[in-house]
Amino acid sequence: MRYVRSREDWSIVIAIGEAAERRQPIGYKQLSLLDIASPSTLTRKLKQLIGSNIIRRVIQADDGRMVAYTLTKTTTEGFRRYERLLRSLRWKRENDD
Image (tube, rainbow, N blue to C red; front, side, top):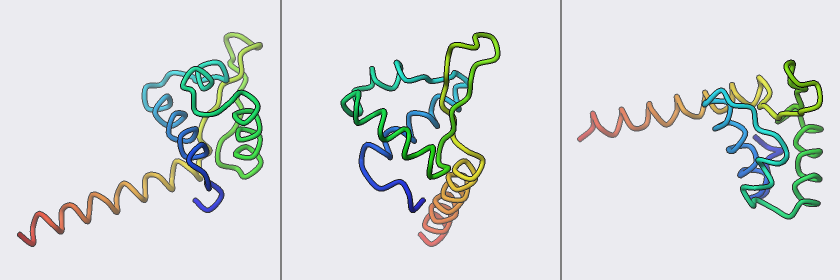
């Protein structure tokens, strides 16, 4: 994921991914409570990640006022490939012993 450059970028992407795994939307307020970055930096980072097609903004259907963030399909697929790679390396290491 070439557009995820900083520690803050990774922390944001991971927090959004973890929320998606729990099937719970995560919005700006929840992200800001994680103290990943200052509010202005968080806003700037979210805009950059959206512009780079890493995450996307989704308006909640049940409450048109709440905006949640999710990983894009491309980002999710990238994480799945990485997970498969790690699993195969672990399997290889376990079977080489």
